[in-house]
Length: 397
Image (cartoon, rainbow, N blue to C red; front, side, top):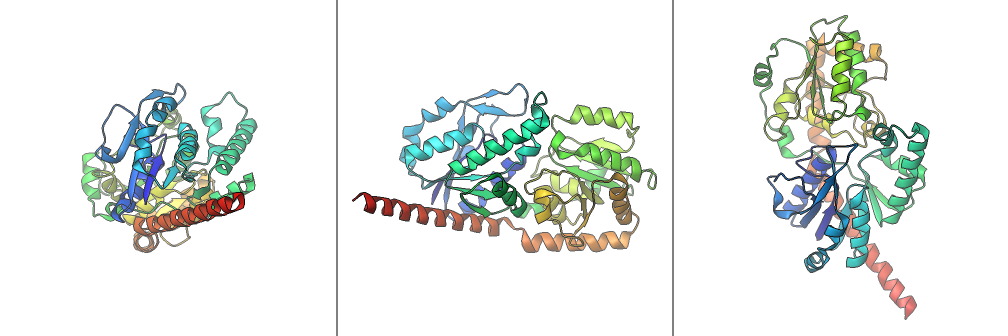
């Protein structure tokens, strides 16, 4: 097959969508399929530009990390795209990419699939704060329903996310296909060396959050949790690895809670060279987001044999199984802290959960298996689309 991905984000912009695209493309290409990507131009070249068609883009004043592709410039490349002979278009984001994908699908006469990566109902009001929360949620539901019903099929990263879309009124063909873990997620790493590099004592109890430092990730709750945990383990350290719009707010809150000695902001880490060591440096991975459509970082932590304590809501419900490398906690700072304490205060229990975490990640979450499922979904859609076109021609005749 020859597939055209279209996304409003890709590396060097670091987020879950970029990671998912790279993971699926790598596996699909290994399977013999051809995949190209239309994505914004950031002014920085990535290591894998050969299959990417970069489109000039402009900034977004309320979200400086992202760019909006110039729709007209992308359409100007229609003749080039037509020559490629794509079988299918796969859209990954709901902004310019969505409407560009629909238009190109019509002009190239190929079906469109769209992955619903982001739970926008719990996202939009953070970035448009002047809109009342209830109205923002209603807008997000309505836009999601119309966009999903406009394509031939949708992919949801988890069953709970698909259930939400069905509640919205999404009727089109759908499949649950999460992003799997790449082989390098399991590669050995030196956590002690990472600690030494960042001035962290080897015997200090370290908690870790990895991901976009954004308001919808509910990281402020983790700071409240550390306040409670510090009562039992005064020297505990929470590392926050990532960047994003909530950084200033979290720095301010850490000062207000007098957590300067218990919080360390690591910033962005290169996925191929530093991230595994960061995971390995932690005793426990902590996660409190309630808006994840999947929660890939949970699996990345488990792949490095790091046990997880997390809230299980929306997409993380499909990953987290109590005792299978994880402890599930409610959004209650005291109870969450107690669950973390039960691990850092008991080396045997933590080791047992660490072993279970790695086994769970290896057994159920490889990227190859998920890419094979995606390819099968494409083939089913192409087959059904071909049958529909044949039936339509017969009726007209």
